[in-house]
Structures are given as structure tokens and as C-alpha cells.
Image (cartoon, rainbow, N blue to C red):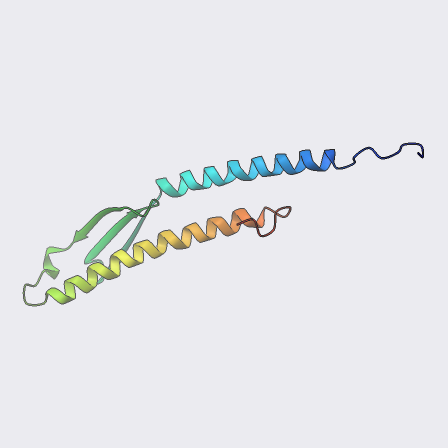
Amino acid sequence: MAKGGFRGGFGGSQANMMKQAQKMQQDFLKMQQELESTKFEFTSGGGAVKAVVAGTREFESITIDPEVVDPDDVEMLQDLILAAVNGALKAADDKTSQSMAKLQSGMGGFPGLF
């Protein structure tokens, strides 16, 4: 065999990949914790209805301005509530997607992992 022969030259590369994977896992857990502790709120009807959703996608609260409560127009109130809740959920989903995209952009060595 020639001087220096085959030494299994992948060892350093594997160690580097493991470090990269561990860092990625730590970054993912940190991002997940941050998202779970974030509150997302959305208002509809010019602020008449406000919905607050946690990053865990659980509803925290719904606030309704008493002035928009019209017993003769319950449908409008229902629409305002739905708009506020859906807006808050969309805000949470958008932030999650942005965070995942940011995390994935730092994973040059692991394309297509997620």
C-alpha cells in the first residue's frame, strides 16, 4: 500500500456532521420554546374583537367590546370573532413558518431534512 494509505478519511467529516446535527437540534428546541411562549393577537372590527392565541395554538383569550354586542345582529359578532381567531392563528402559523425557514437556511449540510 502506498505511503499514507487509506485511513477512512470520513471520520472528521462525520464528527463535524454530528456537531452540526446537535447544534441544529438545540436551535430547533430553542425556537420551539420561544414560539410556545409567544402570544399572538389579532383584532377585527376595528378593535371590537381581539383574540389571543399562544404559540401552542391554544386560545388564551377573546375580548369583545360591549358596544358591538347587538342581539339583533348575532351573525356580525360571530363573523368578527371568527376573523379575530383565524387572524391570530394565521399570525402564529406565519411566525412558525418564518422560524422554520430561518432554521433550515442554516442547515446547508442537511438539505431536505424537514
